[in-house]
Amino acid sequence: MSNVFALLFRREARLLCRRPAELANPLVFFAIVIALFPLAVGPESQLLQSISPGLVWVAALLAVLLSLDGLFRSDFEDGSLEQWVVSPHPLALLVLAKVLAHWVFSGLALVLLAPLLGLMLGLPASTLPVLLLSLLLGTPVLSLLGAVGAALTVGLKRGGLLLALLILPLYIPVLILGSGALQAALQGLPAAGHLLWLASLTALSVTLTPFAIAAGLTISVGE
Amino acid sequence: MNWTWFHKLGSPKWFYEIGGRWLPWFGWAAAILLLVGTVWGLAFAPQDYQQGNSFRIIYIHVPAAFLAQSIYVMLAAAGLVGLVWKMKLADVALQQAAPIGAWMSFIALLTGAVWGKPTWGAWWVWDARLTSMLILLFLYFGIIALGQAISNRDSAAKACAVLAIVGVVNIPIIKYSVEWWNTLHQPATFKITEKPAMPAEMWLPLLVMVLGFYCFFAAVLIMRMRLEVLRREARASWAKAEVRALVEKHA
Amino acid sequence: MSFSSFSDFFAMGNHGLYVWTAYGVSLAVLGLNLALPLVARRRYLQDEARRLRREENK
Image (cartoon, rainbow over all chains, first blue to last red):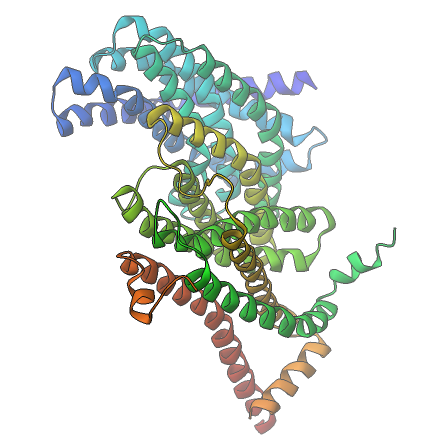
């Protein structure tokens, strides 16, 4: 069982490594969106610092969402999804491996890039651990929830916009908790409460969403 | 326990007949309750000592908000029944109830905004309840859009069911996080619906209106579902006979 | 009755505009929800009538 998980994870990792441009796209998008804001609202460091928690989180959320659009597409087109659905291994486990691999290569990279952009927005260095930790706990939730939407829309020709429509309302708790943690850290308040809540959301989504993703894929493949 | 009624519910023909029998009851109950509630609430209920007469908007705002939330839970329940027992009627209920739910959250949002103007002095305030209702409206849009994007009728229903179930698990989390966000950002605002012990002459009409809204929903849902059942079963002999009879009656 | 006259009732103590817009728009939305299935049913039956007539003429 765990063998399949590891095998699939390695396969996904190898596939992702072969397409570095696709991996870089969400990161570049993340950086550009953040760079747009100083240009739009002005370069005053005070203002930028006060809006930066929300800014970093909204940009991260959109970047993850964009990267998820093609999550199951190539597997759907070449028929490997059908193999997964009929395989004797539990589908929920397989999709968990897939989403985890995707998160390691896109979500984790996003987390590593975030402190740099945070510094550019004028976040004090003391808040960077909270930024890192909140993104580390929050982006898996974004990937897993987004994968539910990606699974439901994989068979559709124009799934991208629909995916955003389905999933963005579900991202709201993560957004509130993540940016709340950063805001608290910025004001010198303890952020542990926010982070613990985020951690429980992560635990909840790791346990529950694979079943929803599996159900979504079964429906999309069966069509 | 006897479960035959549950399996009977799965039969479109049975639903069509029993729905037709229930429809006038719900329709008349809705009409009478809504009329009584509106007149009572608008003309006879005492005015609020703080908000004056603008508080009379409560008699549509709260029932619509209640109904919008209940309909979403009903969507998820119907989705679960449709996925587990493969009941076609549950699919029909899910897809026919979603637009009504979206309209109810629209009413709740609009009346909330109109009520906000005299109460807070602004058309829109990021109040926890209003914000949650806005998110609920977006969730409804998602379900409706997904249902329309998938061309295969059965997969559309199943996909909507999965989305509704995921949404209903998320709703409490969204609700609490929004409330928490709200207390963090604007402490102690004046809540529009929380009243310290509303007197009976104020909440009785509210109760009547809530019941009226539920009956209205039941009546409209039955109307929509009967039409959809007739469409889906167009090849069945009972549906053909029914359509023929209806056409002759109208001609 | 909490109003002494009809003009009082319409004015709603300076809040008439808000109360009546809220009730008016809500009534319109409820009416729309009622009308949509009725219109759809009528259209469906008309289509079916046309189809039945075509089949009979064949």
